[in-house]
Image (cartoon, rainbow, N blue to C red; front, top):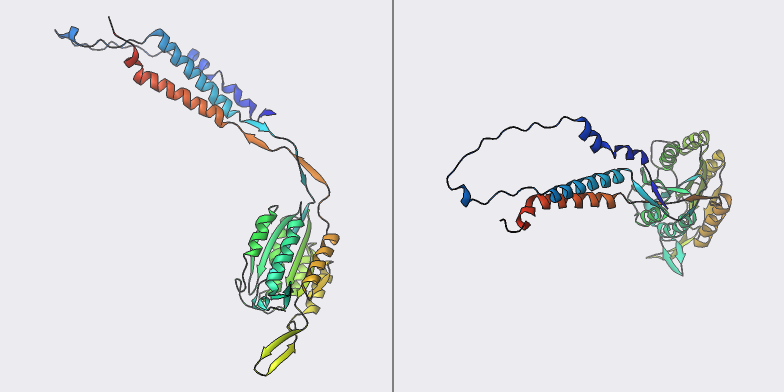
Length: 332
């Protein structure tokens, strides 16, 4: 369907006629002439033929009409497209401190780092959040906004996959990550706001205490789901043989649980890949994706077609004015 975004621009169409009727005519002044005895040997100057003059006038009017049509912004309205909308703003905060490099998680029998598991599972979770606006926060010693709230889930997942250990420092600033999420989500007060915070340690850096940040989040109606990542047991080889250690000894589960309770969320413990996948499936149930749909008809601007036509008419007028006399044929 063809529509005009600014139909009122058609009021400019009679403007050349109005100017022609209202502006005073230019006065013709007598020009000085020079008489020479060998005038007959000169080529006679070309006279503007009436047909050529009317052709240039017609092209000028056509160019003006094309410019007015372009100013009216013709648009082609496409087919209706259904867009799922939930009205939820979802922030994902991922710990990329030095401890996330610990290879105590398994994928197909191969040991991988905690961050690699998070990239895979959280990336799939982001792809499923159709209709939600997703934001990404990376935190270590400092918290950084990697992706602002956006419907572009693919870009958010790519930026998550491109994150690296130590990019934000080796320590962990859980409170600053929560504060960053509160700051970014505060601009959308009427939305359903959720933060999913994933870490494998305790708060060891930052300017804000985690529990104080949780109180601030609760006052802003921000619900926080916390996830503690890391295995309970890991085999380590040394010169004295193989021994078992707890790689998650530094995980502050009490603080993470308190953060979730203060804000009306839940705390989850991911000891392996399967557990982390189940947690994100539970999150899909607790915060379901959009079911309602909004209908959008994407417009495609067509103004450049009449604009190109006006430029073509202008070039023809210039061509006639400059080269027209060369094709007038022999003079008597």
